[in-house]
Picture 1 (cartoon, one colour):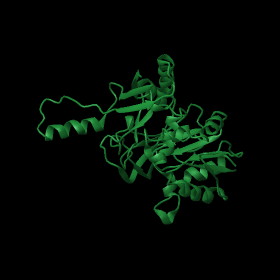
Picture 2 (cartoon, chains in turn purple, orange):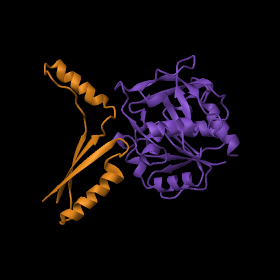
Picture 3 (tube, one colour):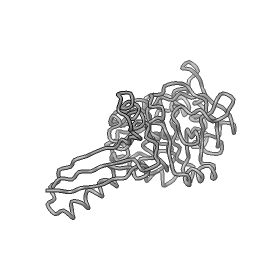
Picture 4 (tube, helix red, strand yellow):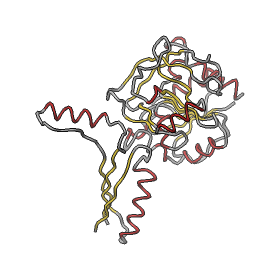
Length: 227
Length: 80
């Protein structure tokens, strides 16, 4: 399988994502600059974390209108797996590939720490290596991670099993999100399950020498499913 | 033409920044501040000279980029 990582001005987790992908998949991803308008034939597209365009206007707003995004949206609509991490999640909501919007953290603090989150859906190609209700520990590092959507949208996400991850305590109980996100939502899938946006950074816990392997399972799972 | 655009959070959308500003005003001794909502103001100079066309263009800009209609409303004024 082949993966692509999109690089925007201000992306800063693109190389971490590339390392995690290479470890799981055995070959490095194609790095694609945001000014490109074409993508090679790939099985996975990653929108990495960072602060694209300095978060000007709204986090992810300008990146979502970068030239490459037309092709990313077309591939996503054609069923290609798209993973948006942190700023990548913000870009996915801004581009309309995922519902809702992501606002400034409720506590106004930049939050940078490892948080527990519970696996709410382990039937997607991103999450099938996890157990349902498993508590995993993944770092967050963001100022704008407060996921918001209307009550109807939230009910639909919950009802259709599209909430992939929910912030929780170490025992798995929700109620203490780091950013005030609605219903403690940390990550959501699109209707067809091929687009995942999440605030926590699985690529930062994909190597035992760098703090943990809870995130490696996502890339290992993708390598198996997309092989 | 010149367009002046106010972008505001929709009613009911949490505004932690506005809340912090309201608290700071209270700390400064300003009494009676019930709430603060923070928004954005943009000024755009346009080559277009027809007000109706300018307004239509700016509305499209708001819907396409400047406002996120999931959480924000916008209001446009167009002037010479």
